[in-house]
Length: 279
Length: 297
Image (cartoon, rainbow over all chains, first blue to last red; front, side):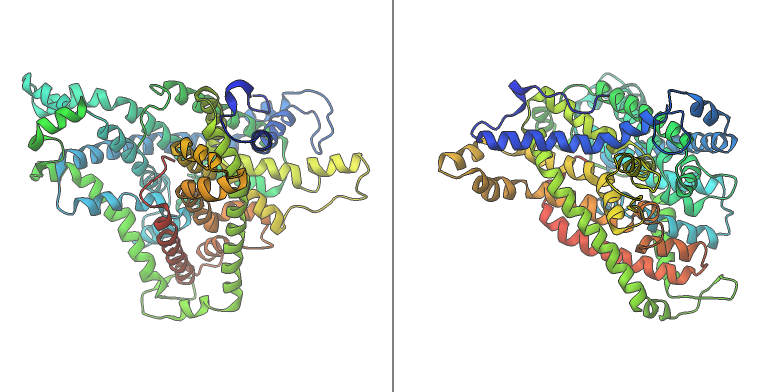
């Protein structure tokens, strides 16, 4: 990734009546903002290949920090935990979110509006409050803090995102789709699995991806509800960051950034068209 | 097309079906989950905040208001106040820094707009730990900024930039800037450019057009961005712990500490409930400004 965004001067500034000064200001300000956003990340990646253990004097190219990173059993174990927890909670959140969105779309329940509004609560609730309130619940239920409690917490803060994405997709659905299937002799169950489900697939995939990345990334909620054995990667990384600079962290961060880029570009290219579905 | 069918079939469109017991059964997982893991814990948090604790740190459920009275001790009030100030500073800086960028992206041609948006999305999706660590490696004693300045003989000794209000606010701004750019971008994209042109035609200068036409029309985006930055930033104790090093604790750090090391859950819960009330106020104030035009972020 290069540092500044590609600027096509012909099409870039569409401020038809804006004076030249305004265009100049907007262009250079935006370049600076992207520089601010990207410079620290780029430096991090760059110095993950630096021979020097401490400080920022360039002492030659090396990949040994990556080698050490893959030898780091503590981090590898934590990463395994993160993958396991992410996978299980993504599956649960996707099922819960998809089913919930479909039922709320298809049927009218009493206090429908209230239920729909309540789904937003875990989305907007600050993570720390979700973390401490779940901790209080688990203590009262005398549920030992473990993988189970972490997975419960992760499902709780990820499934509303799946559900809301699904609602957006359902809103764009032609209602005659299901009716056509039924007219052609499908049972409601067949109509759902043969017609509706394939239509919802893109939203299910992007919802699952979102849930997985939220789970993988979470620190704040997890820290309250995890036991010693079920510590995830962000928790271990947080501990390392607190101690100080560490070339292994640079290598890990570089990998994280590359992974993020792949995911973002991947999901961008999966999107149907320019400004396809918008909630 | 879709709209026409919708109208034709009037009564039978989705959502009109009354829920029978099979529907309730399929909705049950959602309701149970929300009730058990969102509603119940919140109620228990409030209950805990009115409880005592014994010598071992266990919660004793007998009614007291002492936890709340303790919250109004100047020590904790000033921490509350500091958290709000950091979040406020970060929000204001995010608006100032992010607005022109969001505006430029929103006015760019479709192709460059897409590329620029993707470029905003990448830091948006990158782990906050990575992004915070990036700044720690720049600002710390043996970090990049100090080694550059030292080797250029600009400063005699390393500057201590970490663990200051500056580093805390910088960490928040860096992490939340994309959350400000995206909603402002959404409302800039919706902005009808002919209104801006009209302002120019009627003799407004760029500043006047900006303050009288563009800002009011994109205000929902600013409010949405403020909601997405200010509210989470108050409680984002992970960043403030790393960038502040405990020297300038925020309310989130105190709550976390009460629940872990200090083992005073009732007091932590009381602080948490007050924080929740603060959030509700923010939502009511900013949410009203945001009107109905919600951003897709």
